[in-house]
Length: 133
Image (cartoon, rainbow, N blue to C red; front, side, top):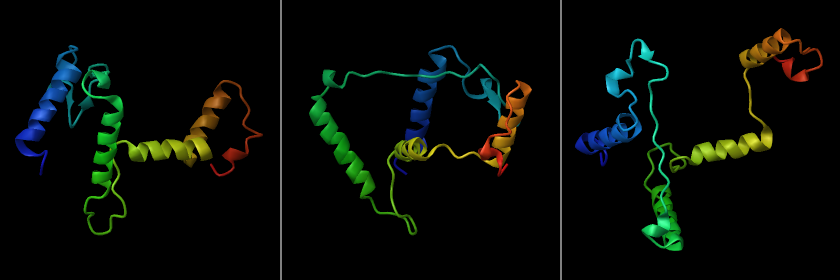
């Protein structure tokens, strides 16, 4: 595995350093455990903005990235796998679908929305979306 073993451990440690240790947030078991779950408000995040043009011509960089995406998508697929997606691609496609068709809600969510509406005095009598709930 190209990112397993010591490479994966190193990447996990660097990610932990940037997202928790650097900000003073909890790291590893300080955050919680598998039985009790994480402690709220103890997690950390890391965000970096990189000026690509400080390292590489922006247009050339886009071409390099496009090439990497094509390489990933054209990789040999496991049996039964129709398509290989790049990181974030499924989420992007889902966002486009939701923007075009709306976000599907299960019946329990619809019931919860109706209950919340009624607690603040909003009638749900005229909402046809509640019919299936």
